[in-house]
Amino acid sequence: MQSTIINTDTSTPFRRKFSNTLYRKNNLFLFLLLTPPLLWFGVVYLGSLFALLWQSFYTFDSFSMAVTNDLTLENYRSLFDATNFDIILRTLTMAVAVTLATALIGFPIAYYMTRYGSRAEKGFFYIAVMLPMWASYIVKTYAWTVILSQQGILYWCINHLGLSSVLNHVLQIPAIGGNTLATSNLGRFIVFTYIWLPFMILPIQAALERVPTNLLQASADLGAKPAQTFRRVLLPLVFPGVVAGSIFTFSLTLGDYIIPQLIGPSGLYIGTMVYTMQGSVGNMPLAAAFTVVPITLIFIYLSLAKRTGAFDAL
Image (cartoon, rainbow, N blue to C red; front, top):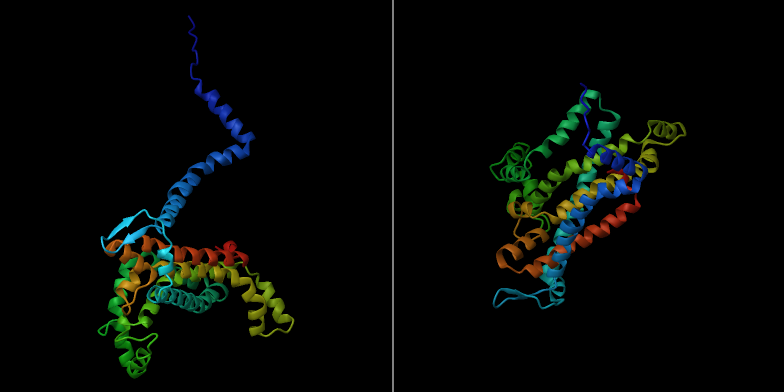
C-alpha cells in the first residue's frame, strides 16, 4: 500500500515568489536593504544632532543653575565674547597646524613606501603605521605625558645631544612655550601630530598607488626636472589623498578634549569647553552652541574637500 506525502509547507513558494520579485525590482531590493541603516542615521544620528541644535537656543539661569525652555540667541552671541572666541581660534589654529605637520611628515613616508620600498620594507612600514592605531588612545596620551616630562626619555636625548639651551629658548616663545614640554603648546602639538599621523599617511599612500609610474617616466623623458615632475605631475594627482587625510586630522583635532586636558598649558579648547560646560557647570545650552562650531567648520571643510575629489581617495 503506497502512502502519499502531502507537502503542506507553503513558505517555500512564498520565499521563491518574494525572491523573484526582488530580483525583478532592483529598486525595491535596494530600498529594503538601505532602510535599517537609513533609519538609524535619520533617527539616532540626525535626531541627536537636531536635539543638540535645539538645546543651543535654550536659556541658562546662572543664578539658579537651571536650564529653561525660553528660546534665545544669547548662547551664540556669547561665542564671540573675547574669552570664548579665543578658545575657538586656539582650537582652529592647532587643527590647522597639526594638519600641515602631518602632511609634511606623512607624504615622504608614504612616497618611500610606494616608490622605493621593497616588499619587506613595505610590510615593515605598514606595521609601523598601523600598530600605534591598535593601542588605546588614552594609553598613548598618558604615555606621552611620561615621555615629555623632565625625567622622560625625550629630555634625556636632548641633554645628551647638548640641545638643552635650544629647547629652553624655544619654550620661552609665548605662542608655543611653557615651563616644560609636557606643559607647553609645543608638547601638545607633538602629541596631536603623533596620534593622527597614520590617518594622513594611509590616504596619501593609497593615492600614490594609483599614480601610474609611466607618467613620471614620461615627464622625465620630456626633460622635466624631479622638482618639476613633483610639482606639476605627482602633487596634483596625489593632492586629493592629502586632502582626504586632512579631513581626519583636522576634524579629530578640532573635537578632541583628552589631549588638551592631559598635555599642554592651561587654556580650554572647544572639546574641553563642551566637557566643562556640560559636565561641571551644567550649562548645556552654551555647550551645545560650542558643539555647533566644529560641526559648522567641518561641514564647510568637507564641502571644499569634495571639490578636490578627496572622497574618491578615502
